[in-house]
Amino acid sequence: MRTRPLIDVAPHRQLVTLPPETSVRRACERMREARVSAMVVADGDGRLLGIFTGRDAVARVLAEGRDATATSISAVMTRDVATLGPRDVAIEALRLMHDGGFRHVPVVEGGRVLAIVSRSDFRALERARLEEETELFEGLR
Amino acid sequence: MQQRKMGDLVRDQRPLVLPPDATVQEACAAMHWRRVGAVLVVEDGERLRGIFTGRDAVRCLADRRDPARTRLGDVMTCEPSCLRPEDSVIDAMRILRDGGFRHLPVTSEDGRVVGIVSRYDFRGAEHARDHEDIKYSEVLR
Image (cartoon, rainbow over all chains, first blue to last red; front, side, top):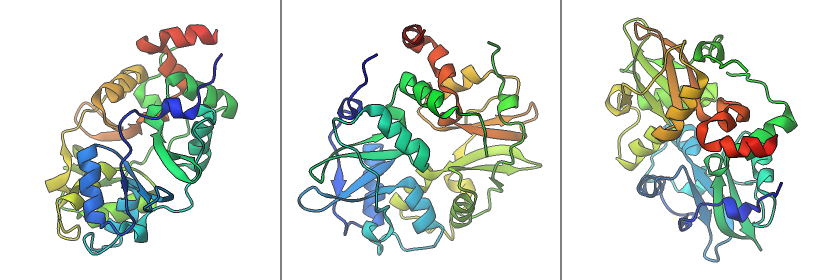
């Protein structure tokens, strides 16, 4: 059974990145326009600084009552993001997400972001294989 | 293999519920505390009125709403799609796949909240059994 390289999983839409000084407000506007659940934050050379997700909006901005216009995404984004390369096997991303409890993995080469994958980009087959490995039981919160 | 029912899946859940007058800030603090991605908005004895998720939180920020003064009732998704405990898990997966949303409340006949599931709570084998993925499960065998 062929294993897909990660870059094949990545959605074909153009990657949108934001500079770190972007306000949370503006980042949320862009996320809504683009219909995505995470924004890649990158410097001028396209190097990954972090990601800003719906979870960050909830936990770090809204729950804490921060001013979304006055707060930059660099202050509230997720740093130390787990990443993979374009030729890594796709199922590795699923393993990372499962083990780490997060939903997005940026695809990076030479420090520069090429794409970002989320759980919904994966086929059922790959998800089934992950469960065989981890012997997943349906423990729900 | 028997088809699982939604009632089995959510049996021991205590989903996060709040009234429509709770503020967005309160909801986000609770979501962060409980580590969940959705709040079920209820009134009149836990009858479901709407759902508020990370996606709605991003929209609130984009719309410049003050989270400390915005009622959940004004920004939630009203009358979301939901299922009954006796509905099958396969039906849930299809609804989530086709609907483009991530959460599906389970309510009883009289509209009271029983539980909630999200798209990645399901076993991969059930995904594979779903009609479009039949060819992948054949390859597995």
